[in-house]
Image 1 (cartoon, rainbow, N blue to C red):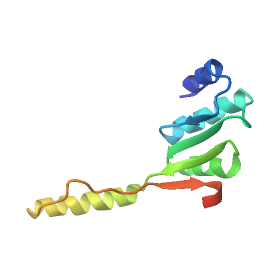
Image 2 (image 1 turned 60 degrees about the vertical axis):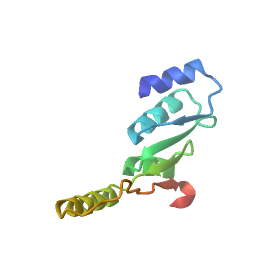
Image 3 (image 1 turned 180 degrees about the vertical axis):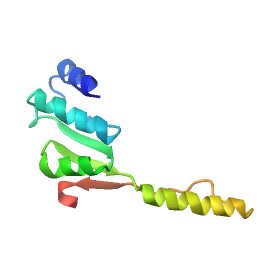
Image 4 (image 1 turned 60 degrees about the horizontal axis):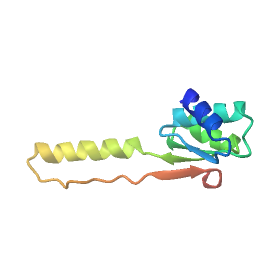
Length: 107
């Protein structure tokens, strides 16, 4: 992710934003944006909700947000669905767990 974001910044000098499909990728993008000295220009959004990414949102103005997943809710639903299946009960096809958004304003 670091090399990919460095390449994007070189190939597109006017780049305004990077979405990291995973907080690790977004944190790597932040490192490359810092290295390119484009903190005022490029905004970064991560995906997962890791503590490290939320901390980066709190302290790094270029890291503007994180799409949060809720693994505890995913796990609870998975166990409940498995129990229903083991009991021979029908289950719905979809069981959405809505993501959240973490921004400096949402702290």
